[in-house]
Length: 211
Image (tube, rainbow, N blue to C red):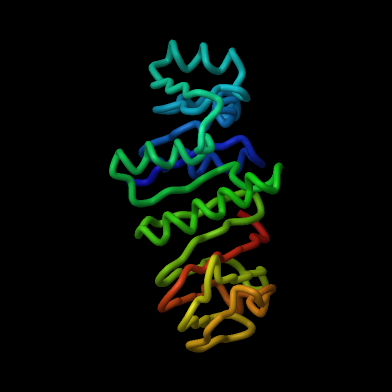
């Protein structure tokens, strides 16, 4: 099952493709306003409701969405609560929209969340109109156009046995230091590239020339 979680960061009409394919749509607080504009009713709206509009809350309430309002003072972010709900539903494939951009601390929190999901065996990525960030603990196949930028960073520790094929600069069974930036600004050599890591977590930043 694929779940799409809509947060309140950078959003675009191009995300309609993700939403059309989703089996479960969850709005993390203010992400509900984006869905309201598209005329999409989420299965669940979750958060402290400090950023979602009263109009969206009223619409989703009458349309059958499950509304879960939590206390504003909490340990988890609204996006994290939405991810936890998806996992309780048995989801193993999660796309987070609106998780990047805006407040830098929230962006970092969402990257940490992606890494944690990957460590638990969940396919996880965050998407914006021009960028998709994947968290990888095994193998990732990237499809795109030749020349698109792809950067790879070990996250919260070293990444061992990293191999990149199908890129302008190849890498074979390399160990990447989390305090170095040697994985930045690689390029797809053709329509597809493969990234593998034997141990550790990689964050892979794929910049799209088009969607």
